[in-house]
Image 1 (cartoon, rainbow, N blue to C red):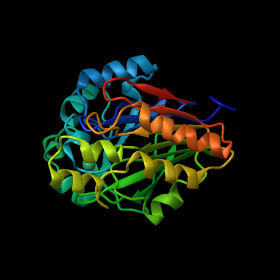
Image 2 (tube, rainbow, N blue to C red):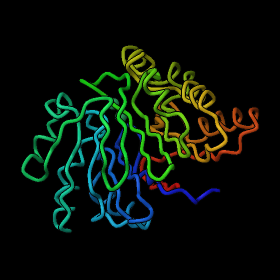
Image 3 (cartoon, protein in one colour):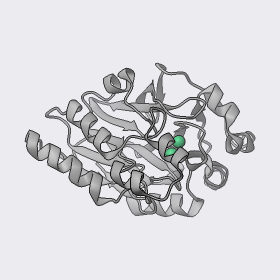
Length: 269
Ligand SMILES: [Zn+2]
Ligand SMILES: [Zn+2]
């Protein structure tokens, strides 16, 4: 039953230039912000387009400290404070210590530390935290649960950890990284060391790796797949969608695939 879930996902922006998403409790209209590497304008515009009231954000989760996930916190938290909204921020202690944008908002919002395997409740949504494999001080993905509905969220990882694979089982909406097309990365303009970093075990998932992981997670309740953190240089929006679609057709799975964009909001229910 498409669209009947308790949870929704709004990707406000996704890619190497900035990332932010909101997981929405559709019964109450409250939400959990995941990362904030976009401008206040993109944040506010994306929320408006998706019909989400930004003042309803009840907490923020941070995957890791890279600036494409953190650089918008200051402006966005100041904007939310003007709306009377002061959501606490949840990140690992190491990630908090490593992030300058987080230090700059110390006076603006309460910051709480989490560790992998912690279970949190934000906006009425259960959040399970799992470790990913990335060249940050620490990095994490999230599983969101409400009334039997489940959203899985994983970007910025060079491989799928056992804990991640387990945590992403049985989800209805799956937001998963499909960063690069391997041939485009190899033939593209990046310096050799950066290419090695991206395709390494602490880099980013390729289209093929993302597709393989989705193939191993197929189940009748999987309805929506969102390809995340798509590289503007080493990928196209079409390639990961076509790769996933070909796999789904072969497996006889009716799940719908979309590409999250760098500058345009995508709403999935
Ligand atoms: Zn990133
Ligand atoms: Zn990163």
